[in-house]
Image 1 (cartoon, one colour):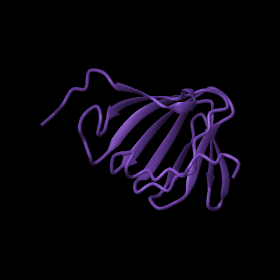
Image 2 (image 1 turned 60 degrees about the vertical axis):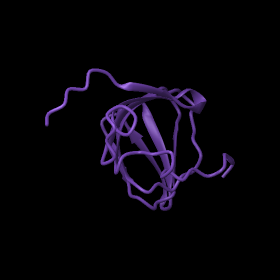
Image 3 (image 1 turned 30 degrees about the vertical axis):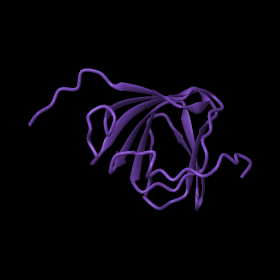
Length: 121
């Protein structure tokens, strides 16, 4: 059945990043996929994580830095990055950034597997 989603659910997170979830466990009660627009301020950083889902990141403006098993990638506006489930990653920004995140299956705090906040790695 077709479904119209009028508005996202706004999910504030530490560090000043805001998640606007359109599709996912919170807003549409969908466990299969989540789609959200992220607004992250300059200097935002999150702990390392080893998610149990694939994450597709598309940068709209600014840039996202992704630290991963094979090094570090800077994803600029108009570019994308894919991290696969089971990969250890950490996301950060060096400027105000807007990006889209798609997670398959849907993002869940229980399956993101964030490490304790030791940001000195």
